[in-house]
Image (cartoon, rainbow, N blue to C red; front, side):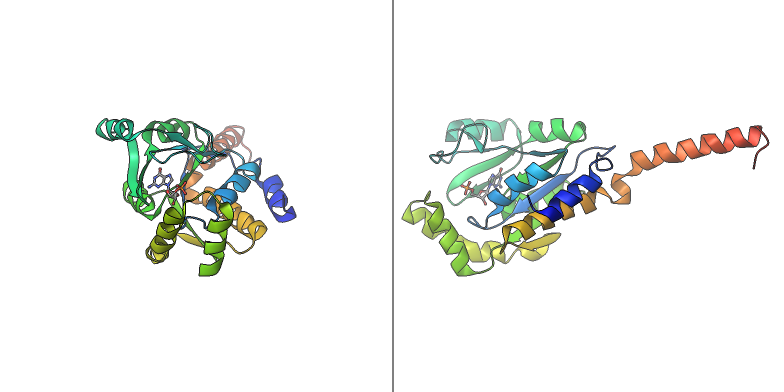
Length: 233
Ligand code: 5GP
């Protein structure tokens, strides 16, 4: 854990609990952009933050566990969920279907927990339209070659899938300006600190602190009334 992130975590732990509904942090990047590692690290250092586990028709990679990275379902199950209105958003990405569970989001945000959604650019656009108070972050790879090297090093994609992901990357990159923030993922520690900082800053917005502020204001108002009754100034 970097010292910058630790410092941020320590100074904000007591004040970062939202008194209102949780916020959605939507994180996108081209495949291989490093958002998975980045999100895992941020979940370790930022409190009161949860991860939305998507449903997908893609087959699991050797290291993936059902219910941890994704819920792996077949096409028929996925279509049934679409028909049942179970997804907040869903999209076909690189030939497979992916969807965000409405129930997971509703339960966690109602409990005041913030959620990170790892979705493609189509999913990010859908969430932005549906939920105006969500926050979107685009993770940009530092170069074409770095993206290619990362995808190859991952060793989880067939040559066809790798080729498709690289071919789709330029169009995905073009959409970066629709996002609220962009992080260039050239150095993981810096990128983790930046994403954590965005979350902390967004939590500190006046609109997200209204519940807490109101409570403090009421205390001041009660003290004011009490003092005026007692004839104090
Ligand atoms: P991968 O197959 O590499 O895990 O994911 C492929 C792409 O699908 C990534 O860009 C990932 O962010 C995106 N993705 C994962 N879950 C969802 C989801 O629930 N909705 C959408 N729209 N995209 C998703």
